[in-house]
Length: 300
Image 1: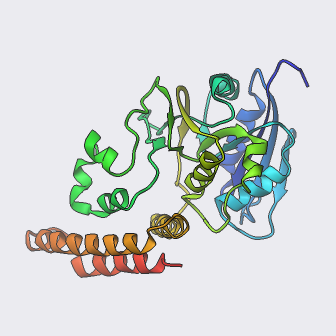
Image 2 (image 1 turned 90 degrees about the vertical axis):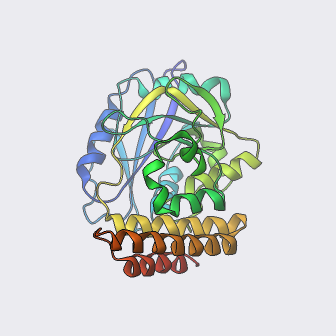
């Protein structure tokens, strides 16, 4: 290992089709300017990740979700820096070196790059810590058509200061790509495995913030994220609501969140009834029942 090259352990969780994970791993093995340890955490995938020269595969006995998979991978990590990376991302040959260089003045910190959608549109990479108001505004379907506006993006919790080229401290960065010291991750116990999917990264960063480790958005280093393509949208929404209820249960306000989302469901039902009377293809009662099922099902 070269003493002047940063040493980074990259943990990539895998579940499902091996093709995206393989592409990500091969791109990592071609990275320039860094010494990488690539660890794939196979989360009891129905399509197991194959052996790849230059990468280590950790195989879990059961599917525990994103945080559990990453935690298993981190157990095998030996380098001082840790990069948690989704399996369905694309990046250039100096991505890791560029991210480490941009992160260096802020360390110790959790550092997230600029995440782009497949079409090149910047994704809401940096967020404010969740509040009941954020989640209630997001739940209100009549507001959906306005969410491209900056005020509504802020109202659902996006930090709109985090634009391409900006570098600034934020409350938290999304878990598609997070660079941080390995010992900082371990010192707070890593991801809480009670979150199956979603909210594990904000919970982690809130605990790290309390320990003096901030989160930083680096809009000068890009990464492309496909995201969510292999899972059922209904499952993704259920996981999202369940994780938000779990987060509210841990950090306070779960009863308030349940009440607020229940009230927002009533508003949605009134609006959907009007849409139905206007000839729109919507079933107000069925939608309301499903929304209430999600809210009540998340109270675990």
